[in-house]
Image (cartoon, rainbow, N blue to C red):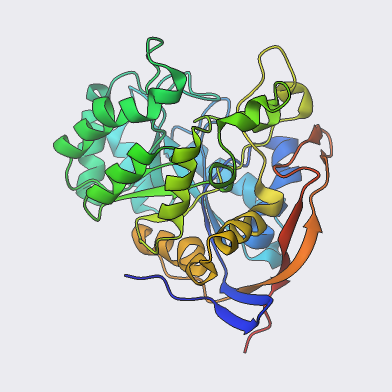
Length: 360
């Protein structure tokens, strides 16, 4: 179904259905308390990643983590965290089904072992979780995929494309009724695979993969604050992602993959992967859609395709965006944690988030 056009109140203002973030890392403890508000002020709901230390692997752990998130958010923001289960080789299908039936789990997340931050407990072989995937297919529970192989023989820039060949194609063949989200896609191959798949396969696209290619990590020296996993790819891939995002296809929707790390963990001999884009996420997406001449498709991508794929109602409330320059600060200070560099640090964005829209 084609995306509904945003409501143009004036040439320089947009009134959008309140969006959701279908992929975010909120962390825990002091970091959670310091960053969750940036997500909650814009987004009504968010799919929360489970790769804590230790990971969120059971229904009980998800209930406890959800309670910590809710306690850290101003209730006036009206934010709902949607929890996910971290899959391992030993995941319990019965517990996962119970968590989904009770409305605790919205989905389950598959990290290939050692693919990214806190993924050491991830799945070593798809065959090890065939019973879990069969159960998820039967009950209609979505599977979220971090789409990279971890074979050291595979170049890091090719790991997503090889994942499609070795893993995703196998999942699609063996579990054709499984609802699956290819998360934070970065390649033209991923766009083509999702486009060619049936209606049960979708993908999220981040704001940073729409705006940077792999040169950003090496512009004048090593730029660790542009290092994420999956890494940004060549320019042709960035352009393919932009075409997909603004296409109006219901298969593609918003997922920031916002992943904060303090400066010391990014600027180190072995820096962490992840970009903290939550503070100006909707502004970044708006800039991209504007550049593509596709502001009318922003509401579908940000607020309609995701809930429809997950079988959830659309949000009733609205947000306002204004065409007005906003300068992104060089750092965000998180109490009890330290400084975090946001995506677009020191840059100007042409659209400003102006808060909730007044009901009409």
